[in-house]
Structure formats: structure tokens, C-alpha cells
Image 1 (tube, helix red, strand yellow):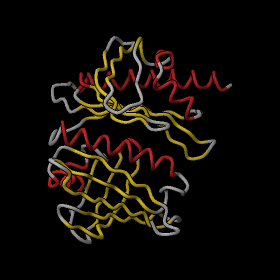
Image 2 (cartoon, rainbow, N blue to C red):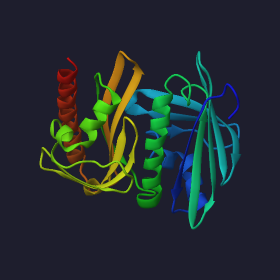
Image 3 (cartoon, rainbow, N blue to C red):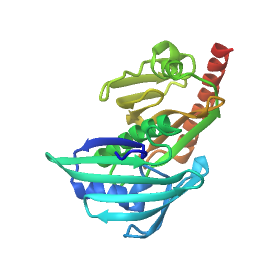
Image 4 (cartoon, rainbow, N blue to C red):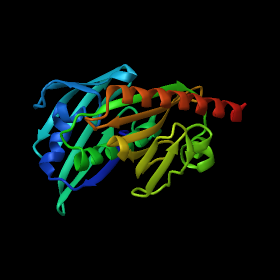
Length: 271
């Protein structure tokens, strides 16, 4: 890392060929199944790519400054008033699979304002990439989403996201979420639905677990712009083509109500 260029660096090992990993980072129809919601543009040297996160009302425009199939791609974006964000993806053979590394430099990276979110955000995104590559490749995802402003401290929030008592105060009738990747998860929600899966990743203020019943995963997230502007979020994805639109809408409604209960619990504790 060069002086004055803060960075975040994360990697995963996936049991897929490097060509598949490269496609997941370059083809819009694959990027939209694990990273953003929509992609426009063509992945060629010097071309422009727009990635959109529809529920956040946000898009980012990148230029592909370097591309070496199937081992490397570099995205660059100008962040107004802040500088240039660079995302470098390197892929190499690792045993029978691939080692996939992402390095982000510039605004929001390690050591810069917002670095905590970038560090955790890449851990979450890389976990979503791994499960897409290994389990749901080529399938279309549909999402549910709930977001609300709420004050919290990170350790406090993770107690609500992981411990039996914490989860029971807003989401579940029973169950816990362990710390370690690969540990089993068995939750019974207040609605009677079950969440069976595994821990995909746990950071210091977010987590993602697989949800086998909907052939997908659920994320418990949080965002901090500054000490006075914080939000909590439940987001998830299903790759199950047999899950009806009404069933997915029902899950979103249930998660929205649950997030309201979490907001109230945090507010009461912090008052």
C-alpha cells in the first residue's frame, strides 16, 4: 500500500474455476446476483459501467482501467469532493478452486472516513459472492429489504443480532447466531417460519447467514455516516424460483415489523 492511499483488502477461496470467478466480477447479469441490483455497460478496457443499488437509491459509475481475463480487473470511479475510488480484483488458481482478492483504495477505504463500513461491507459482499459462485450460479435472485434510522453501539447491536435473548427481543422465538464461519444456524422466527443455514460471515457490526428454506441468505446490517446518523437494516436474497412474489412480500413485511421492534428496543436501552 502506498503512503497516503488507504486501502481495504479481502479475499475468499471458492471451489470454482477462475473463469467463473472472473465472469462473476465482469458480466452484468452475474454482478446483479450478488453485488448490486442492476448493471449497465459492457466490460471492456476503457468502457463505462454503472452499478445501481435500487433500494438505497444509489448508483456508481466506473471506468474499467485494466482488464486481463480471467485473472484481473480494475474499476475506477470519481467520488465528487473526495477523490478516486479504485477497486482491483485479482483471481488465481488455488488447489481445485480459485483465490479471489479485492482491494479498494481511495475514499472510504481503511484509514479514511467510512472505512469501518468499507471493511465490513467487503466481508459481507465477498460472502455473498462465495455462496452465489458455489451454490446458486446462474440463478436469478429476488430481494427483501427493510431499513430504519436507529442509534446503536456496535457491541450492543451484535448482541441483538446474535444472542438468544437479543434475537428474541425483536425477531425470534428461539435460536442464536454463532461467530464462526460455517457454524450451523437454526432459528425459529416469531411468525413460525424457520431459518436453517450456516454462518457465512460475522463482522464487528454486521452478519450474513444462509437461509436454506428460501434458497438464499439474510443479512443483518448497519450503517454509520457519523455519530448522529446511523441506520439498521435487514436485507436478504432468494434464488428459489418457486417462492412466490406474495411469499417474498410477506417476508419483507415481517422483517420490516421486526426491525421496528429492534429500533424500539435500542431506543429504550439507550434512553
